[in-house]
Length: 334
Image (tube, rainbow, N blue to C red; front, side):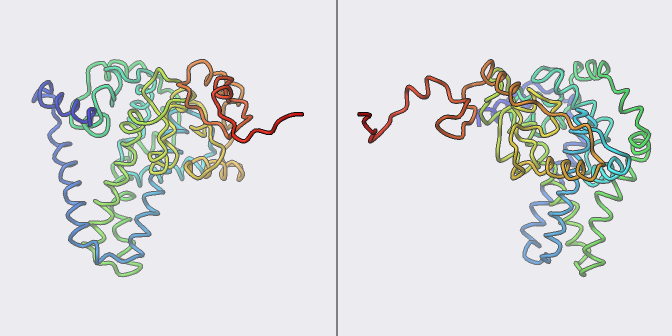
């Protein structure tokens, strides 16, 4: 609550009228209001097939963001053959976010200058600003200045990305709004207006907020086993909602790891599961990760002491923890 209060105070006292992007404010407020209204007004009339389809479409768009915009094009944590890159571009279009070029540039700036005025969604300015408030305002001059220094030559050299950039509006309009609305109408007879509300407002708004939660919640709440000096934290809830993107303390320490997490299982990191599947097919390759030895060394050097252990005898268990343990009903050695 303190973080939300900080954001509201800043917006009320320091944000100048000229800084506000009224078009963004109107669109975001209208879309959220309509999504909530549509849910209460027509939620009981929506066909189950439409609900399941919305879930699938949300996952497809999310995968385009996490495996595509984030792990492939921004951090270059793996390489992808052209069929996979095409799939990822279509999936990213379903998400309906900013152009891929802008997304990659802003996210590279976010990592390079995290929690400073050059960070597009600086969480030092509070939860609301980091979540959505940054879209209500014009960019801080430092965000623009530092954005011009980020190397984007690899993205500009990708002909598929540049083709997508050139026709971005059409890709977004068709893949994010038109197709998801028409499919339920055509295949199982969902009324157009209900399909329009569920797919273009409720599904879209939920997907956006899941992505935004990585910038806000995962920078404020959670433990920091890999580096206690930075704000990004390990947030299991965000990881579940954002397909594995909430293991944020690890990710900011090791941004080149394609898993974005230390965990070896897929239950809260579905993006890694899909990348591994494409690697098995041969479409994803040169997957970069971090050795356990490097992770352990970083945990001991900068972690906040909350790194998980599997139990007694784990190599990461400290001597202090062993000495502080209470052993009950101990067996006497004769």
